[in-house]
Length: 379
Image (cartoon, rainbow, N blue to C red; front, top):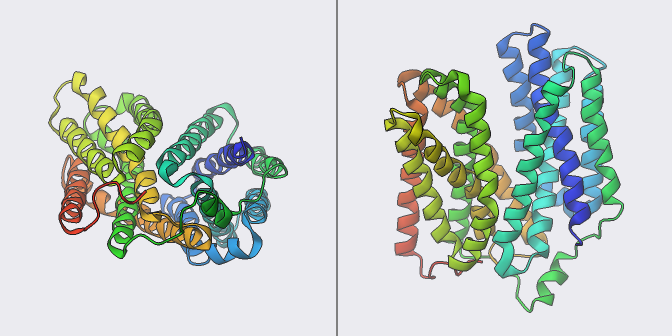
């Protein structure tokens, strides 16, 4: 129950921030802005996230988790309101970068908090609950685009209000003593071996490339396959499957081992993309999207809990920051590489995903053969 204020904060902040990410693009398009300008403003947010991954741990260590989240929420609310004060592109770029930095610090603070207070043998389940709350909030936020007049500046005030409202639950949040939580379990805070940390970082990079490519280009890929009238349905089904598999994945990862679940997720995504590539009828599309959604959306929390091992305290926050950096790099490079392949091949996105998960699967196989510790030791 002590995480209820944190999850309430996460829901409100995600509703405001995720709505704003989509709103900015829709608003600029309605104002007649060039596509290149819209893309530049969108990229500024993710560049801000990437930049914040260099100092997030020191920022959180200095202020504490609760104060850091308070400042991030206030910054996101201010950055949303300030977009209504000017139409100058340089100022919009600065404000979106500022919002990206605040969002990144918020992610690191929440994720390290969730991992730090969870029992070591239940960290995957804790991350699964966190991702379920996040994806649910993200999906609901997109409904505001149709239900609210995005062409007016009052929509920005709605986003700012939700971010500001996220401050209230933090009043009841108990500042986590991560070092004490680990000691209470009788476990010694320690880093996993370098090879396991590298595997976790690589997994977050792959997860970023995978989700970035799918989120940005799957609608275009479906239109090229003459499924343009049902893009929304399939994208919603993709996210729904990712949400539905979060809790089972977390429980299984804690029981059978995180590295084993990484292999299962890799196989699911690869098989799903092969079905999408080779399928000629609609009957195979639904199970294919089940496999892709369930595998792709659970890879990040599994690799994250694996890489953190038995860490507690500042070491956990620092590792979470590194994982956020790897994920951000993947989110920026994945759509670019997948886009080039989609231009060259009719099913370029599926080819990109298959090659990506094949390379990741080979790395997992080598890790199983070369690492001394048995599967599931890094909990």
